[in-house]
Image (cartoon, rainbow, N blue to C red; front, side, top):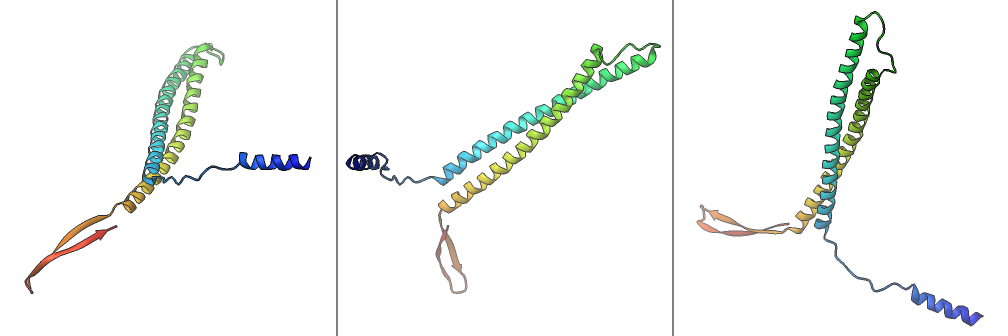
Length: 160
């Protein structure tokens, strides 16, 4: 029994052993560019939904307010009450006002999400620019003219 356990132990060590380590370089600029693109697209998507929600809210508020004023004005002008809370016109007006309130909530939540995504995309863009500046080395020649000693030449400048 002891020999069987030792054989099983040896087999499992080979079965669970890890393969060779591959040294793969990660292109930081490409990574941050990809993350920036993702967060910027999410920002645009959330901003688009937020804009649509505020438009729907304004339209619903206008229709709901107009229907409410119509029912109130029509009820004031008559001796008997034409509209109760269960009449279809009042229910429609309240539905439009309810859609307006929900649309304002959607506008607020997607506006917050859009601001968070904008902040993330700006952060990734700054990191990308930081890694791009690390990678770039500029070599330039600066002219050197000395009119007093009547010499001329150049200075080799390296910018990292």
